[in-house]
Structures are given as structure tokens and as C-alpha cells.
Amino acid sequence: MSNFNQKFNIYTLLKSTIPVVAMQIFLALYTIVDGVFVSRLIGTDALGATNIVMPVISVMLALGLMLATGGSAIVAFQLGEGKDDSARQNFSMLTAVTLLISLIFVILGIFFTKDIVILLGASEAQIYHAIKYLKVFLLLAPILFLQVLFSIFLATASKPNIALISTIIAGFTNVILDYYFIVNLNMGIAGAAYATIIGYSIPALIGFLFFFLNKKGLFFVKPIFIKKVLYQASFNGSSEMLTNIANAISTFLFNMMFMKFFADNGVASIAIIMYFQFVLSAIFFGYSLGVAPIISFKYGSRDKKQLKYIINSSLKFVIISGIVIYFIAISSISYVLQVFTEKGSEVYNITISGFYIFALAFILEGVSIFVSAMFTAFSNGRVSLIISFFRSLIFLVLSIILLPTLFGEIGIWLALPTAEFFAIIVSLYFYTTNKKKYGY
Image 1 (cartoon, one colour):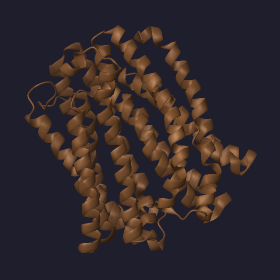
Image 2 (cartoon, one colour):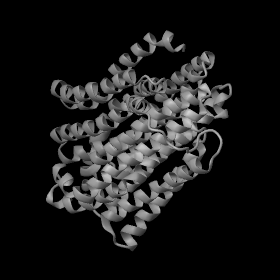
Image 3 (spheres, helix red, strand yellow):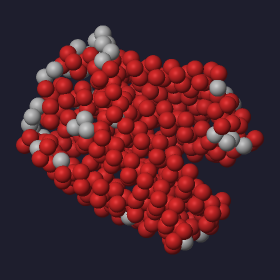
Image 4 (cartoon, one colour):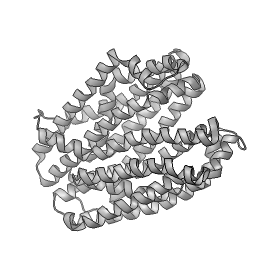
């Protein structure tokens, strides 16, 4: 943790956070590539099946992120206070709890996979693929959970480069195995699932070995169950969990609205846009995850001067990045679209017609994402949850439902920018009213 003891300037701050940003972007990119393999090599029914079971996988990721981000704030704060032994015990306890939670999903995979798939509404054409795909994720759930946990805690241990390198290796492994399992071994949708999980196993294994063999800073010790710490970690990370669950809900609602106004081509259009947004938003999420343990450490060490500098610099970074990302998005959308569909096609024309409005959200969203993560870093799960609740659920759901009703087609494209605009108001309210309390 000695790296967090340094006096940060903009260069060292970016140096510490860029590996986590790159990791999030890379994860987003190889998720997209994974979808392309399934669609092109197996078929659209298989691609639809992966979307049908995605809510279950999203819940798994949400729970993993909840414990990882919420626990990271506690552990980094304790390291900043110089309470290394407590930090190690709590980290080890959170790892053990994460494994226990993952075993619940293993049991679901053994006995209830088919029931879950039917409950999610899989069609007759999708049900076979959906069962095959989901069963692999459920039976091997501990790998997914550990991958999420160690990716976050490697940044907390001031080793984000290890997380980045392991994620890059995992991504290339996933892509290679996708082709090998699907084409050479003819494993179908199960092959795609195994390729993804084997990819996840690389950062999970590297993280486990690091924390097992490392004897400085953060490493495994005998875990001691402390109910209060588990509750605080869960509450701290609840905003990150809510964001993942809300994304599944908003995606469903967007699909419904685009189907209503543009039929099947509209669903294809919003799917492409969501892929695009997934990659660009990864910059904000990655930066916020990367800077959070630094904020926790500086807050724990009572270094108010550095805390103020880091938070002010971070706000400037996400605002400037949002403007740059917007112009990158609108200047590149035509070329990105042609990877998925021909220029001049109906899907292409639908997407181009509203993307310039939709992309305004990229200018706005970074502030709320960072402020929510900042309060998680302060172990203020209540404020972080409120911001995420209004941003990801209330404002967005209301915008998706109401604006198309009031303004027609243009209302669909306005939904996300409108939600992000109101989310900034809520975020800045809590940011300004808590300045004195936290000393930034």
C-alpha cells in the first residue's frame, strides 16, 4: 500500500487509474467479440438465448461487485489508518463469504437450471441453448465471483497492472477458445460458455496466487467472521449492485419501446447502441473503480489536502472526458455501425437518426458515476445507493416510459440524456452538502 502514501499529482493519479480503465474497456470489448462469435457461428437463436439468461448472470455480477467495491472501501480505509491486520482479516473474510454465496448458484445450477430458463421466458427455439449456456455459468459460479473480487482488490492492494495483464490474457484466451470449442469441437453454445468461464479463471487464479503468496500489504490470513463488517461492505457496495440490476431492467424497457416504434430493426439498433455505450461508459466506471481505493486510503490517513486535490482533479477528468467521448462517438458511429450492418440499411438509418441525441448522455454520465463511487469510497453506502437508485432506476425508467409517450420517436432518444441530466442534479446536491463532513 506504500504506493497510496505518495503525494498524487495528475500524472501519478492517471498512472494509478489507467490500468483499471483499460481493464474495463478490454472486458467490454471482448464481451462484444464473444457475442459476435455466438451470432455468426451458432445463430441468432443462440444469441437470443444468451440474452434471455443474462439477468441471472447480471445478478451474479451484481452480488460480486457489491462485496468487492463495498469491501474495498473498508479495507483501503483500514490500510490508510495503519490497521493492516484488520484489513487482511476483513479481506480474507469477504473472500470466504463470496465463495459461500457462489455455492448457492452452484446448487441452483444442479437442480433448477431448466426451471430458471422457463421462468425467464425462453421460447421453444431458445430453451435448449439457454439451458446449456446458463448451466455452465451456474456450476462454475465461484470462478466468476472470484474474478470480480480479485480484480477490484488487486487495485486496492496497489497492483492494478496485475489485474490488467490477467484480464488481457483472459480476453485473448476467451476469443481463441470460442473458435476452438465452437468450430473445432462442435460444442455449440456450451463451448461459448466454457470459453468465457475459462477466460475468467485466469484473473481468478492469478489473484488467488498473488494474495496467497504475497506477504506485504494485503494478503490472505485466517478469516474471522465479523457481522458488522459484512453488513457495512454489503451496504457500501449496494449502489454498484443496484446499477447492474437496473441495467437489465432498462435494457428490457428499451427493447420494448424500440420494438413498438421500429419493430425488429429497432431492437437490432438499440442492441448496437448498447454495445457502443458499454465500451465508452467503461472509461468512467474504470476510472471511478481505480480512484476509489486511493480516496479511501487518503480519507483513512486524514490527508485532507490530498483528498481535496484528488476529488477535484477527478471531477475535471470525468467532465473533460465526457466531452471528448461525445465527439469521438458522433464522429465514429457511422464506421462502427458498418461492422454490424450495411450502410443505408434500415437498422443503419434508424441508429443514425437518433444517435446524436442519445450520445449527449456521454457528456453527463461521468459525474454521477464518479460521485456515487466517491461516497462508496467514504463508506457512505446510503448516499451512494440514493444516487444510483435515482440515476439507474427512477430517472431512466420514467424517461423511457414517459418521453416516447409525450414526444414520440424522439422521446426514445431523449430518455438516457434526460435521466443523466437529473442524476447530475442529485449527485451535485450530495456532493456540495457533504463537503464539510469529508473535508474535500
